[in-house]
Image 1 (cartoon, rainbow, N blue to C red):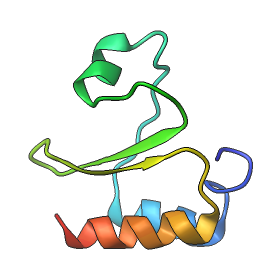
Image 2 (cartoon, rainbow, N blue to C red; image 1 turned 180 degrees about the vertical axis):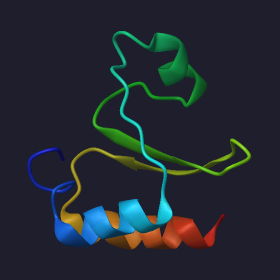
Image 3 (cartoon, rainbow, N blue to C red; image 1 turned 60 degrees about the vertical axis):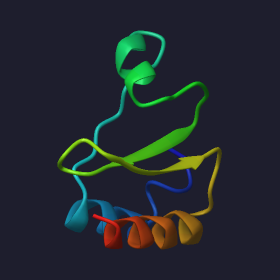
Length: 77
């Protein structure tokens, strides 16, 4: 994801324009991982401003797929 998907211009634009992002090290931040149900990586968890989990993207996803899913999840907020 770091090498292919996140650097893609479409994904970067979607993330910058519509999302607040953070990256955690699940081995160091186990409580955060547990809070959001992260048991494997890579995973992207979309969370509403109220802390509700809107959805997850599990495993490697090509840029087009992540952009499409983020756009869909944005509509759920």
